[in-house]
Length: 106
Image (tube, rainbow, N blue to C red; front, side):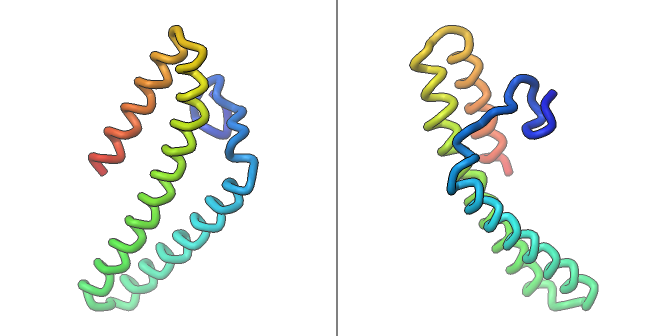
């Protein structure tokens, strides 16, 4: 397995090395701050509805990141594999389908 993706043989995903990588990192750092704020709210015993509102906002922000990554994956990895055809195309389509199913269930 490679250290970046958790998947064997998937180390180089060039589309994340452009401006989008920085945008994703910025968004994830913002979400990290939101989660730290949630921890403080719980520690301070904030009103439950206020905490739930912030959980919802954090969840939506993570979903937006996930959808952006999925869109890039479909446009780059899956589209390329489909153009090449064969077993790789089948694998990438199945992988994308499983990722979509996980997002829908979350």
